[in-house]
Amino acid sequence: MKTLVATAAMITLSLSLAGCAASVSSGSLEAGALEGTWIGDNLGYEGGEYQEREIRFVIDQSTGSTFSGEKSWREVDGEWSEPESFSGNVLDATDFHAVDDDGYIVGTLVSATTIQATYLEAGVDAGAFALTLEKVAP
Image (cartoon, rainbow, N blue to C red):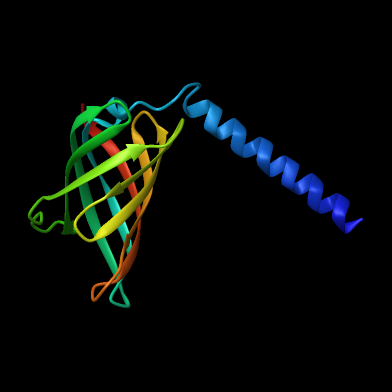
């Protein structure tokens, strides 16, 4: 009985996730869809301390499935940091990976105007952040 319930739950979850992905895009995500200015929340831990920041992506170049731009962050209502270059690659219908000088971004285009991602950084300033960005300019 437990196996039957677990199997039914997995099938339901799989169908639900497939439906969510299909509602975002019926084809492959083109890197050009990411071009523009995105701003949002950057919440997580760095060096063992909780941080609430804002983040900005300016994606200004794309070719095929690859893209590049600059990212910056700030304390809420503070000054923007110096821009840092980053580059990425679109994996499939909604997902992408990117890298900057010292960290990795694993993201999903949730809709034409919303990105959800995780930023991971190793080393002295090790951190993990949840990002939710909205497109504010094409």
